[in-house]
Image (cartoon, helix red, strand yellow):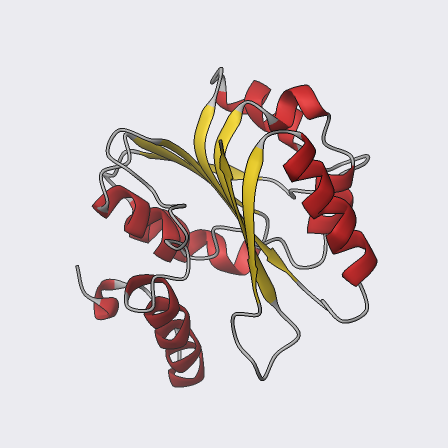
Length: 191
């Protein structure tokens, strides 16, 4: 698989996608601290964008990936990029509250009793989603990678979320992934 197999519409968009592609495929940002997709995993990709992570997970041997994306601008490329793969595309907003697909609803929507790996990159909705996920639902997922936005203004919420994962039997690592940004990735793996 090559980057240029992806459907993009202009050079600026291509440069941005090349960056994202590099982070996932070469820098392995979603495979650290023992938190990684393994053969036969059931994977959920929240914030699937155009499918880079979904294809990465399938390449690592995932049995099936549920790719959830809400942006109309990404849907055509997502459908194109995931055609004829072991994936299911779900067009919904992931978050918490009315009109959002929360973790409990994801289980119902995907009709799966458990999830081996979940990637969450949902542009600031991660805080409410995780703080409002019931413990019994959280425990049905083995491995998590969550992108946190605005980490310097939301550090208290991050501490609450770390405590929640720890209380529910997860080992946690938090990495300020790009030192020139206000982003961090949380890696959680069930003990």
